[in-house]
Length: 145
Image (cartoon, rainbow, N blue to C red; front, side):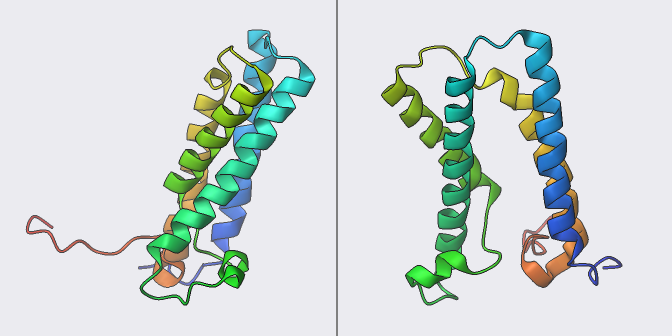
C-alpha cells in the first residue's frame, strides 16, 4: 500500500478526530439549548470518556490474547484499542452514572453526530497507518474477494 510508511499519522488523525467531534458537540449544544446543568453534563462526559478509554483498551487486549501475555502492565502498552469497545464502555459508564446521579433525561442526542465525525476522521488515520499497527485491517479470505 502506498501509505503504509506513515504510521505516525494514526495518532495525528486520532487527535484530529477528538478535536473535530468536540467542536461539533459544542456547536450542537449551543444551538439546542442543552437542558443539563454544567455539573451533570461534565459528569456524563467524564463517565463517557473514562468508560470509552477502559472499554476500548479491555476489548482491544482481549482481541490480542493469543499473541500477548496478559498482565496488568499490558493495559499501559501503546496500541491495542478498539472503537467497538470504546462505544460499549462509554455507553455502559454513562448509563451507570445516570442511574447513580438520578439523571432521567436523554443525554446522548447531542453526541451522535460528533461521535460519527470523530470516528470517521480517526479511521482515516487507521487507513493511512497501514498494516503496521493492526488498525488498517487484513485481507479477507472470503470467496468473493
